[in-house]
Amino acid sequence: MRAHLGDQLVIESPATGATRRDGEIVALHHEDGTPPYDVRWSDTNEVTLVFPGPDAHLHHVEHGQQPGTPPGASQPEKVEPGSVSAAAPPTGTPNPGDIGRRVAAERHRSGLSLGETARRARMSPDYLAYLEEQPADPSLGTLIRLADALGTTVAALRGGGIDFPPGQGRALLHPRLRDLSPQECRTLLSTHGVGRIALPASDGRPAVVPVNYEVVDDAVVFRTAPGSVPAAAVGKEVAFEVDHVDEAMSQGWSVLAVGPAHAVTEPDAVHGLTRRAHTTPWAGGEREMWVSIRPASLTGRRITPDDQ
Image 1: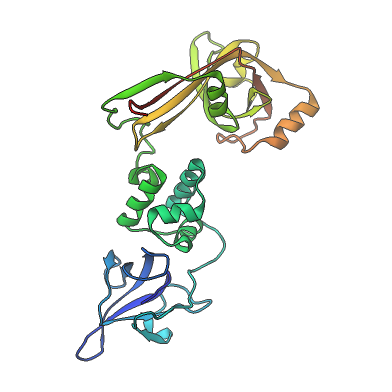
Image 2: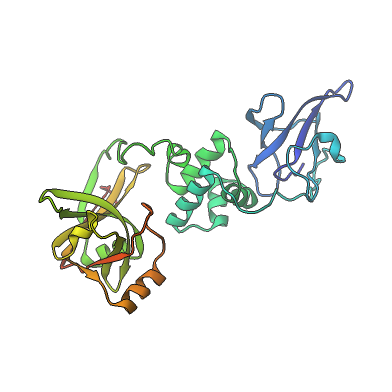
């Protein structure tokens, strides 16, 4: 028995042949489409892990047919050993749901290909691609395998901790805290992301605010608006911090850059920074003022298990 995502699994009565239950296959556990499957039952909308028996049949989704089509709309396939489905997983214009976006972001952060992630999570690459591109509601078992493959947690993939600060898990039993070399700091700080700038604000009080940043020619640069708190960094020595916390492994790192900040005003330089920017500021609005921090010192620390 071999299935594809979107196929209908139908359970018939051995005595009468009448349909007792049917559902949509929403996750595969083997790349070749062999059982078991995660099935969303039409009568309860619940997803369960199913090992089909001899009373099970497949209805394949034909090209252009949407998942959830009533079983009678396509020719049923009697379950036979070695039978192969030609159906493909549902496709369409990418429009991922929240879980799909988080899975894709964690996969890219980990530097894993789609195929390698699917292999580690013991699922079909086609299903993983579908999950990242279309709204989906994977089963708890699927999320557990994905979280394990990506080194994160089910709660993180579901966005359950979005209103809580990171690092609420237990500390390592035997942690090791070590200083990072300047080169390690540059590597971790490099490219782009979200960091925090610490500076004396206009009222003289200290302030720490997050900004979207880029690293260009060893300088930390970010966009802001004139008169904003980050704009007050210009002409002052400031601190810029970036970090990452691995909740699943209770470890992480932080890098601190300290140096003078100045406004970038030369038109060609401003144009070059805008052209090379990986993202627009998440806060939105008109933020066309570029500020550059060239670190005079660069330090960092990393927490790992003592045996690493």
